[in-house]
Length: 92
Image (cartoon, rainbow, N blue to C red; front, side, top):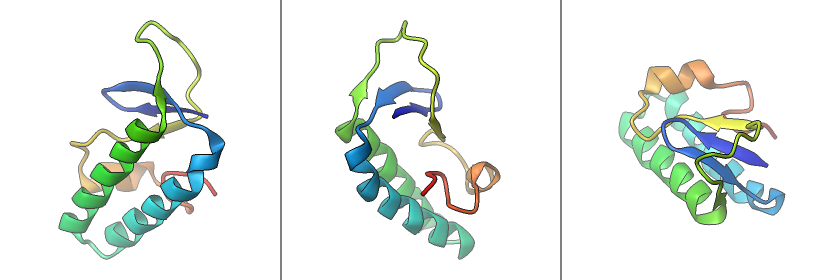
């Protein structure tokens, strides 16, 4: 799956890694619903770090369609809230 991190670029992440990513996404959703700004910052950073660690960056000149778009590390709680679906940032 091609994942875009806003402000950074695209990363190709194997489907087998989405269990780990969904765990972080679920925690992020809980923190957002509870208004836990500190937890939100920590978990958003962990989610983005996991995508970078588990994925393979695409070249800057690659123009692949992104199947998933994640906010950048500096995104606010309200900005991320606007991006959420019922499943969080990552479907499933």
